[in-house]
Amino acid sequence: MDAVSGLLDWFQASGGFLDKSHVGFTVFPDCGRGAVALQDIPEGHILFKIPRDLLLSTETSALPGHVGLARWREEKMHVGWVGLILCMMWETAQGPRSKWSKYLESLPATFDTPMFWSALELEELKGTSVVEKLGKADAEREFREKLLPMVQSHPDLFPPDTIPVHYTLEIYHVMGSRILSRSFDVEKDDPEDETEGEEAGNTSLGSAMDVDAPQEDAESIHSGASEHAGQDEDAEEEAEEEESSGVSMVPLADMLNARYGSENAKLYYEKDDLRMVSTKSIKAGEQIWNTYGDLPNAELLRRYGHVDMLALPNGDLGNPGDVVEIPADLAVAALHMADSPITRERIDWWLEQGGDDVVVLESDLEVPLALVALIRLLRLTTDEWEKAVAKDKVPKPKLDDTVLTVVRAVLEHRLKEYPSSLDDDVVLLRDESLPLNKRQAVIVRVGEKRILTSAIQKIAAQQSDAQSSRKRKMQPQEGAETGRTSKTRRR
Image (tube, rainbow, N blue to C red; front, side):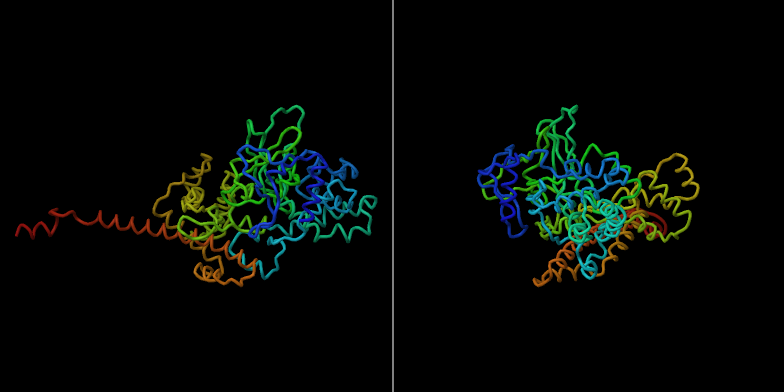
């Protein structure tokens, strides 16, 4: 905790306020370093205040100004995270000369996130959406094509002998992971905007905890930090449009842990500072929790390197927020449709209409309406298809027996994408010697498989009930005299 002591001394010497009588920092056995209530804390209590000039961002670092703001924007260093990553690298290279040296020293240098797993370890995540979301190749492309050329073209700012020390691909990934797991989306201080108390949210680019608006008139703007990866043209345009907000590293606020449904504090921004405020009463000795937005274990593992294991309604342990992502092309496969121009035309139109290429099955096991609408779209006759296009409307998500059969086939296809069965994984989790990364991967798989298995069972029961109902309707009512039965009775 020496780094923490240095951080707290720097924080208070730099104008930050910490209520040391109520808030302390310690290491929790199950979730590492975090904040603890030293005495009972009432709801609405200010735990600490962070002056805006202590935030580390491309707005507060001197690096963009040294490079030249025109050049900075010309090289698109303001788009995505590459600019902030470079600022953090440069500030680290300054050592004690950097305003944030004590803060940077306190940040983790290693991570348990899949970004740093071996190929063999990543195999354990097969079937989940985690690996394809890592964006490692895109991130490394941005390092080669944007960050490194900027560094090499400014030897005055980045002396050549410092490049192998402070500007390596490995450090780039570490800085990106710090942003992914700890950054916030903080609205800029606009002198003409008198709205205060906004919730400062974790950036949609891929962050961790929430920041809210001032306690009065607060509006939630949290999302979760953005992906440590490259962005396509549309994403770049979107990022440029979002320049009213800035991805920022927020000292002290990023030390709070989070757990599903446990939030008892939230970060709010005011004109001159950000404030961590208790959202409910907290007993002495309890952990002070922020929120990551109650994410599923797949996202918690990808972004932060941990999973939640809580009691579920059915008695199992897992994450109540778990979901299963289902690619739209599984609907095409379940319908045995060929990859033809006609199929691609319908999928493209679906996307143009605002449909997603991935639908989400949640733990409530309700069939996603988007999946129903997509299946109905793919099943349209040529005439029906042409009418839908003319009306510019996708089919209504009406769930009939035929569509339900296709939905079941989609879910069965999805379940087969995992290399092991649910029963096998449940048995595997009983092995206490399981390595951490493998254990967490199995926990992610188990949570998703339980949802899929339960949803399939629910659909099978619905189909069985419907079939039984149809049989009952087809059977003649007792006492009815029809056909041969009535003749026999007359005899």
